[in-house]
Length: 331
Image (tube, rainbow, N blue to C red; front, side, top):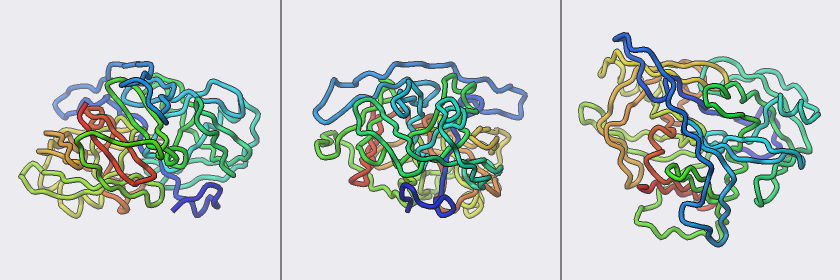
């Protein structure tokens, strides 16, 4: 379990893929070229009007990812992705340089992003992030990671990432249809919908939820999935889970998917499963990537796969961090 300010060598810092090449369009062997998805930009707005103990974050929505407007040490605006798949909040080195914030070089680390490549890291102190009227976020140590590489793919400036250490103070609501993100005071929050809350784990600051996946041949398996609002990818199963169930051998496919994260490109065979169930929410015929990676997040055995906005956008997603619950409700 991570703690803010813990020694970096003992802190598992993880960022899932922030952008999906082909924007959800499968790259097939039949000669069809990849194309970026049509850009969607929405200014965040209240889905049902203001509620007591809730603040709609000033945010923009592009390519399935939410960008929150923030200040750093009283200066701004800066733009942070709202990323349940990131274990820690970070700022980009170019942002730190612009603000004159001193950064201590920590060298390179493996297994930070989805790809196998190393990620350069730094650290700084006395950084205060403010998002609207929410309580200031001032960890004893702030990590500095180059997260702006995906700006062109996502079509939006990226100055940093709001990760689990920031988000876990609230009940976070992601309304993809409205393009809005709401931070609820957990003490005042009460869910009155029909969906049963799903118990989640936050081990290592990873938001992990149980699921039921029905494979193309009808077999049901139960992958533990990382819920990742910072990724606009679909469902990608990690390599150990893929090997355990012999999915590549059982379901050969000429279709491929490619995702680009903070440390490089990964590709996976793509199949169509029959359904994915998260609690009482069901996604029919989800495109499912089968990772073959040997390093990076997709090679992790700590969980079984990642689900991003390509599937989540069909729902209103509520993450009740204090109560360790996830609600996936129809729009």
